[in-house]
Length: 236
Ligand code: 5RP
Image 1: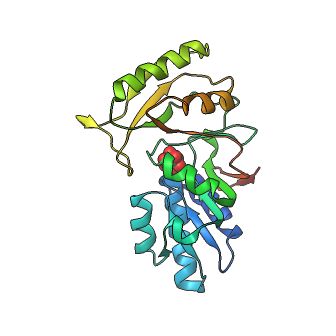
Image 2 (image 1 turned 180 degrees about the vertical axis):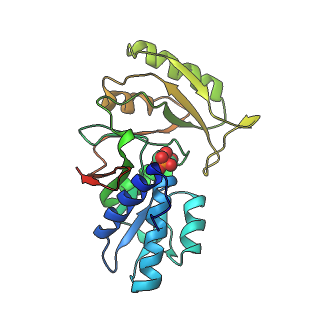
């Protein structure tokens, strides 16, 4: 599968390949979203079809649900599963404490619910997402459509009150209209450059009325598998 891939796709593929080695027969899995998670779902599909692997998957987006079904993976809801053995997902940034920014693909809400309901979360990533301090990647915040401009203004005030460097926020667009998540919400991206206290920011953002969830994953990820363009893999 990896022979004709670009270095970036090779990195994503080898990370996914290493991560699926953690999957065991009978597991209930959380299936992440994005271009790295894509490889993980494809590889799991091969294992189901070719090796008779028995798993059920809880997808974190309609995109992943569709792909998983195409791959022959049995898809169930989180309420049916109740609790998961393992979630494998991508990330937009991760730091040395394995805290993450997620939501670049717009699926942060389901991703956080599913990862939190799992015994273990493994992040698969190419090396470019490794950072000393989170925040260069715009932090996605999911907000309900009602009054989103007021919510956006309150988020900006919060960033000012916390002395966060860079206080620009933008409504994520899909062409000429606001982006709509699987849950029918919008996303406001926070261009903060550097997040000094990610734990505090995550808690404070979620106290703003209208904010549904933010893309900071604190103390949720257990392992990061990092792929390199030359095919090397590291596990942290
Ligand atoms: C989607 C996510 C993705 O995991 C994140 O954006 C990484 O995506 P990719 O693997 O395509 O770089 O959080 O909401």
